[in-house]
Image 1: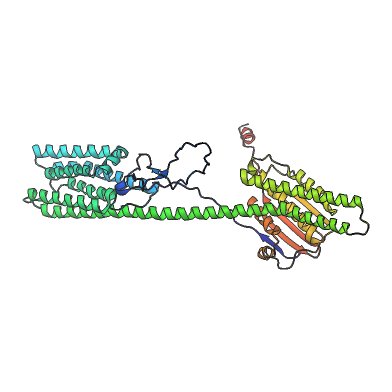
Image 2: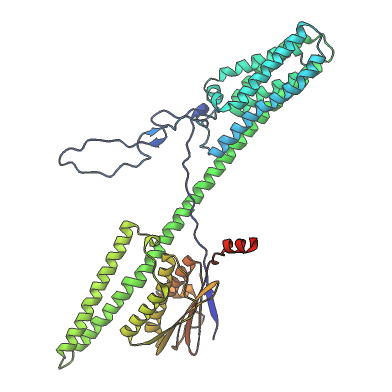
Length: 498
């Protein structure tokens, strides 16, 4: 055999699209008609004689806001935020929830130390009451954050209650107490929820509270240093909250852009795949039939030009022309039906590969008068998906048709060999062989798409296609990996127990 060439492509993967719901300013869904969400179908009465129109584009009509839920209106900022994914919403929600978890842990650990450093009597009772109140509220927010978050976003003034709690805690325990660090959660939460403006306002109010409390505790040693330390932590927490929020926004925007690019690429690949499929079907059906029709018509014209034409021979050739024309019409109708109904080969009943190969080789031999043999070695082929069987049969038909058209061969052989893990299908002839240094690009440029169609069909089935030629003809071989047969686990287990 001469040089052998193999082609194998990569399967096309489709990405499922997901709807992305944009949020309006300050986290609320956009409710105006100009900025509303997905379209809603409208019904209009049709009067007599009125022409029916196709449904409008969903993006052109009015849009309805998304249903309320944990993620609806979750984000707020000075400007309208970009459309985000549920992943970013869940991440911000988890960060806000963990803020209350940090406060809960801080209050739980710091309460004993704060009470130990407080004089007995009413001050100790006040610290205990403030700590218990903070622990209770933090636990409630941690457990039911999904229920409280929409209200907190719809009414940012509710954060004043959190500031009030921090003021009470600082007044009762002093800025030098470990409980004072629980107030750092307020700027952090405001940065996560409201962005730069909300974080700036609430952090400023928190610093004002610290300044007021410092005046009440300035006679205690170390109060000034503790106040400055807590104030620094508050400013840093606000900046960290806004930074995390912006990172989530940027990650959401990048994810959305990547998703849109992937979707566009998937659509382009799907369109290209469908065009290639139609080209293969046209080449393997209508194009071949029309070519045969042209040859039959030429033969009829040649016979009619004889001095004494044979009426019987002319009638037989005319019958061949009419039969080819009807077959071309039927194949065209099948293609149109396929386009209209979007038929799926997976829903068609499975066909026996060996029987179909035997039928096609016999029909090819009777039609072309070219001796064609089918050999089958090994076991019977396992049940294959209908689409796989369809592609294998189409590859065989295309290879035989190429032998008839281009090989100038006297015999053709189709070989089917089944091994435990591979199906081998070979079509060879004793003709002139392939042109030297033939490539898919050269064959496509010269208008010969049969080899390209075979390569694409083999790729659709996951098989490898090889083509080789020498002085004795051309050989097209295909190797299709077969799934491993199921192992009888139950008998083995029973034998082991026995």
